[in-house]
Every structure is written in structure tokens, then in C-alpha cells.
Length: 485
Image (cartoon, rainbow, N blue to C red; front, top):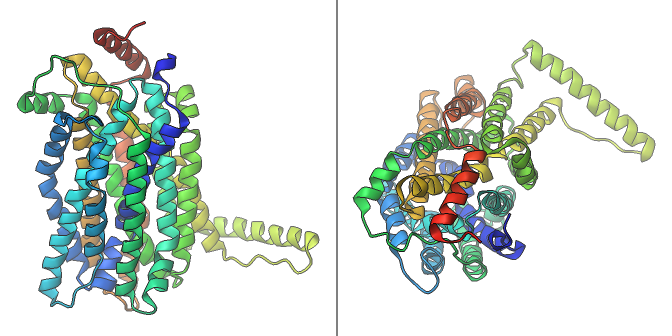
């Protein structure tokens, strides 16, 4: 790799802080938003799911427009970095309003939820689209971008792990028995952290790749180039399915521990092992990419991880597989206690085989799936390079804006599906759930996200950009820009 293409570790870490800021909100949405709206705010799961889907329709316009605006922004700080500063404080304020529970009627609460959540997501768009596009212009080198993306997601999953473990604890601590107040003050705290992280991201990064000097503004032509990009279409389709799967399983987890295991205190630990497994995977993604290539590793991550998620249907089924797994796990626990007793008198590890199995599945599935996150965003940067190589026009912001639109639609679609399923299976908040309702929650933890991810892996086989082709594209783009030494 040419020395000029290499990015310092300080800048890579600085860039990752921006995604840490975004994930203070995104992971709260993924794991707790439906639970907050149904069990704290006080509206139905169907109303929540419908709201999440309907409010995303506006993003069909807002996201590509924001990407196009960012592409055309001209400041001494670049095209994309200024938005990190401009949007930081409004982002924090909107988060607090969204997680504030007003004293309104049922209909009034639904209207309030629509307004505040829509405002928060518009500001999220204002900040996160330029932030994501920034990765495409920090370096022109595809492999270096994979490294940047890997470190970015270490920051993202570290923040996500923090959210997953501490959120309910913060709610309890801040609220002193008033959960609505606890959620509001927790989001005040997260907002302050987000502002600090976004400012640090702005200060530590810079933009190096610019559009061709002769490129003139032409939104219609740029949109045509976007929707005729086969690599981009493939990635967006895959991302829609993967994010929908994440939304379904993530939303089901809190209900699963509250109503099925009757141990809501385990939610934080369950989510933390998920986060640590993701971080471990992301830390080695760049190295594995050099061995296997981005596309094969990505297919393995979403397909293999999806199959492991299917195993969440087994605990409690009394199937032959479940009985065998319980026997094996019981033997492991017995062996650990025997060894611990020899090393330390009085040692005893108390954990049920079912809980052990659930946590083992979570660690394994999260580790395998963890490879996908840095890869997919590095590949979106590749699609922007491919479009410039093919058409002579560079629109990094537009390409990433459309990708982020897919993430929000995927999340909203998954949340909508989950809300429909809760309603179909007869869920009622804060009561003992009947067998039918529990069956629906377990399906949302296993077969439904499994099927979505396996389908996404099959679609990924159609993705046409190989690492070999990207090396060729990178070299030819450098030559066009006059960057060849």
C-alpha cells in the first residue's frame, strides 16, 4: 500500500468515535425502543411497529437529499465533517424529547411519539449520512477503508455494549422507582456523551478524496447512476434483510428475558456478551479479509450466523437435540464445579443448562455475524468507487445516504413485523404471557431472523465486485486523478 494512502491509528480511532455517538441512540432503538413504547410510554405494539414503518417513508426523500446536499457542501473543513458539529446538540435534545413520557391521552401519546421520533430520525440523518460518507473520502485505498471500518465498528460495538449493559441500570438509578423519569434522564446523559464524541470525531479526521474537478451538479444523473449500480442494489437488498433480522431478534430479547425466563436482570449481561463477541470479530476482520476476501467472509458471516440463531428455538422444546445439549452442558457445568472445588474449597458455579445454552448461542452467533459490519460499509465505499470508475462522477454522500436509508427501512420493517407478531400471538404488556404469546416471542428469537439472514446470504452471491477488480479500479481512478507516482 502506498505510504500516502495510509491513515494513522489516531485518525481511525477518532473516526470511530462518531459511530460510538450514533450507537448511543441506534442500539437504544434496536434493543429498547419497542419495549419503552409498550411498557413505559403506554402505546400498543402494533401502533409502535406501524409508526416505525410509516415514519421511515419520509426517509425515501430525506436520505438521498441529505446525501446530495452533503456532496455539494463546500467549507474549509470539507464536504462532510461540518455536519458532525452542526448536528451534535440538536441530536442530543431530540433524543431527550423522544424518551420523555407526557401526560396525554392514548391518541395524544401516539401523536407525540410520531412527532418526536420523526424529529430525532431527521437529525440522525443530518449527522449520520455525512459521517458515514466521510469514510469514503478519508482514504482512496479499499483495504485501508476496511481497516478504518473495522476500527469504526470496535467503537460502535463498544458503545453498543455500554448501552446494552447499563441502560436499564441507569433507568433504575436515575428514576428511583419512576421509570419514565429514569428513561428521560438516561437520554440526557447519553446526549451529553454523544456531543462530546461527535466533536472529537470532527477534530481528529480529515477528507482526502474529492470529486473530479470538472464534475457539475446534476442530481437527476446522479440518481440514475445510483439506481443502475448493480453492486449497490445487491448490498442494499442484503442490508435490508440483515437489519430487519437484527431488529426482530433484538426487540424480542427483552421480552424473552422478562416473560419467558422471568429474569429481566439477565438482559444486560446477555447483551454484553453479544457486544464483546462482536468486538472480538471486528478486531480480526481486516486480517481475515486479506485471507478470504470481503465477499466470501461477508456471506459466511450472515449465512453462518443466521443458522446459529435458529438454535434459539431449542431450549425448552424437549426435542432430542435439546435433551442432548442439556446433558452435555450439565456435564460441562459438573466438570467445572469439580475442577473449581479442587482449586478452591467451596467453589460452586450455579447456572442452569438452559441459560448456559442460550448464552453460548448468543456468543457464537454474534462472533460470526460480527464480521459483517465493517465489511458492508467498506463495500459501500467500493460501490462509490465503482460508480466513479464506470460513469466518471463521484457521489459518495448519495451512495452512503441511500445505504443508511436501507438500514433505517430494514430496522423499521423488522420492528413492524415484530409488532404484528406480538399482536397476532396475543401479547398484552405487563401480564403473565400465555403459551401462544411465548411461542411468538421464541419464533422472533430464532427462525424468523434465521430465515432473513440465510436469504440475505443467498442474495449476496450476486454481488459482482471482487477484491481483484477493486485493485484495478483503484489504480485506474488514481491515474485519472493524477495521483499515480
